[in-house]
Image (tube, rainbow, N blue to C red):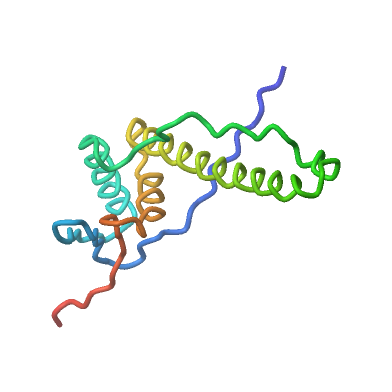
Length: 148
């Protein structure tokens, strides 16, 4: 039996094309890192994510089990009395919203664990960037000028 041929990994375009300043906006002040290239960006991102993970107060998985689907299914709504159709529709909509939020939180928590365990700096950067709108978790890359 012939072994499948592995395709070479797609080369990713660099995120840092010139030296930049990586800034983390945290509760007690900003943290700044000189970031000349992607390798440094990913190394710092992994270090910050790992530090936060080990502190134990930054990231939490879902507190509860996955939301339970309502007793009625969407296909059954037209068979219900009109007065119950609105309530059933609202329950289904609410369930889908809660389930989506639960899935997102679970996926993010698992991604954090994977990034720390496998020391994946690129994944760590994506997680930190995606969470940058959370309170005390701002992160951005800034250009800066050097003295001539």
